[in-house]
Length: 166
Image (tube, rainbow, N blue to C red; front, side, top):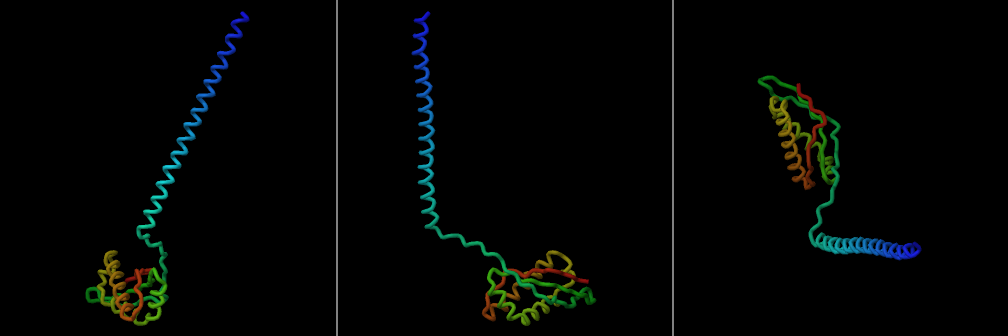
């Protein structure tokens, strides 16, 4: 019996060596896998940086700047032989503050043109969303045309803050 106990002891050492060897090989494989992944990703990142630096950069986001016109546009519009009343509070949107400063500088001229444009619009057009969008586009074209004539930068949009027709 004593001989059997001594014979079993070396077998346990052999199993322990096998377990340690498998664990070391597994850890080595994991380490090499992680190192290889970092090596490949490092090369891809470097080439992506080189490619992006050679291409023209996209323009940076510029927030819009707004200017409210404090006094509303008030005028009468024609509606089937009757005169109706329209009142619109406006704001201008631009990407450049210089455009709003130019619009402020020439505000009497702009308001006159916008009042004339609003007065020549039909009442039925002002009652539909499509008509209001069209009016906004016409106003934008009129304002930008005047700003261009005066040598000022253009604005981006004409916005309605309050729109009343009756």
